[in-house]
Amino acid sequence: MNVDPRWELIHGDSLKLLPGFAPGSFDAVITDPPYASGGRTQTEKNKSTAKKYSSMGAAALPDFDGDAKDQRSWTRWAAAWLADARRACKPGAPVCMFIDWRQLPAASDALQWAGWIWRGTAVWDKGNSRPQKGRFRQQAEYIVWGSNGDMPIDRPVPCLPGVFKYGNPQHRIHLTEKPLQLMRDIVRITEPGGRILDPFAGSGTTVLAAVLEGYTATGIEMSDEYARRAVERIEAELSQAA
Image (tube, rainbow, N blue to C red; front, side, top):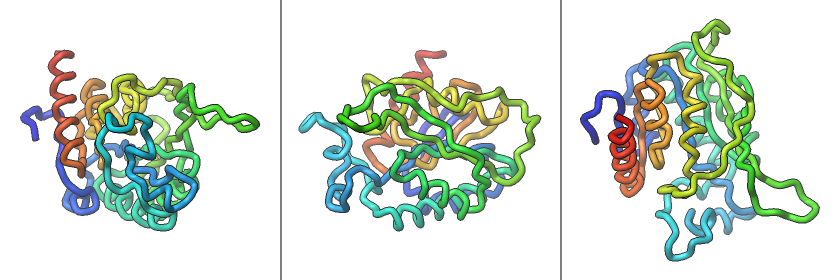
């Protein structure tokens, strides 16, 4: 969908596209898949993503698919794409997957079932959340991370923090968009010059962050509307940065 050799965004379903990549194509997987966790009951989960994650009413951002699974189905689905993504990665490649507290146990299960080594959980502190009297604030999301087999300690990458504190983006083009600076920090777990895979590109933030930090990147996005928005956003911001 573009002519810049540093990045590509493929419009399609990751479960169908990931098996088509040659083994050892990527140096890292960094992604923010649908959490399928909004709501306490299955009825609430089945609502549109705009209703679950936005209070903007008619002005809400477009919906996206894949967010209405129960936990068992989500875990099976995540294990499937994580296994295909691992096969497409080089030995030692890191994987970083965003998730929330509800699906955190399922995410670490799926990661290991797919053959990755689970190495820890980092924290994204958003700094704000809906207050609930007598409750701890749910102001954090998590990054379950690991590696495709052994991960040498002497890789030429910096020492990364375990907690990242950034507020939500103010002018989002996706319902669950992550801050650009957060993603610029996280992609640095990849060895210099590496190629990063994001199977759920959304607004294109991971792809954009990767290119800005000197990597190449491939994103996959199933939604027509979000694929279009991501390409426009990446092209515009890279043009400004040139």
